[in-house]
Image (cartoon, rainbow, N blue to C red):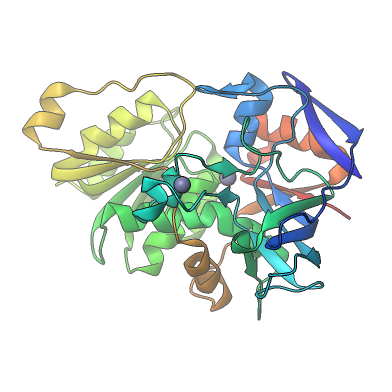
Length: 345
Ligand SMILES: [Zn+2]
Ligand SMILES: [Zn+2]
């Protein structure tokens, strides 16, 4: 089968590798249909690492996938050949202290699709996953929804962890697919005062279409003044969704006393810094987000029953053989790209 593998910094090559096989009774072999490119895939493509997770070449990235079941192990009951499924990329051990305490997303022995040192990714024609990672796509749900359920579940989880409730004022700093997921998940629980910033105007246009109360581009205007005009008392909750120090600082500056900063973005640097005076006097809470836990089903449900429409998220599509063009486009933030999808025929 064919796999699109990273072979160096900004290098992707098509390679012939053996098809993975069903070995364990709970294994499911999947023919990939579609894969969304994630910001983290781009970090591995352009930097060869995220923090201590370093790519050993050749390596396949990709973890936002959906496909069709082609074969199942002897104990698999929830899916069968021919089923369309969403793929949950996390494969926790289900035995360690974290797994046993309901935190499989911080499993000590986690294997995550397309994460260096853990598991190859899904930018290949076939993959094998445990049954628990397979979520049946029913009703109106398409394989695009299946793929989007991965980033969208992170938005659902971030909003849940933020303890945001109906009627609060929130800010979303960075409006890529994760920022957009946070917005859609917030709207789904009745939050309508949503302020959005991003450096790309096309993304702000999408935020406006989705009903943002106000948007601002920090390259063109003072977003602190702008958001204060609309919300003089400050924000209840700010979501940092781009991994940038400026966004982190702006978010804290705009929070009201007792406000909460939720950090979802993945920075390319090693340390955040923050204003001691502001965070201390305003008694700001800080919540970091590590991917998500138990939110895939809810994400699929929200999309399936029409509570959330993710159609504006996908802005570009590329065939499998042109994955490199797709990665270059996303890495350069070109052409107003939000989410680029790879189609496997
Ligand atoms: Zn992702
Ligand atoms: Zn574990």
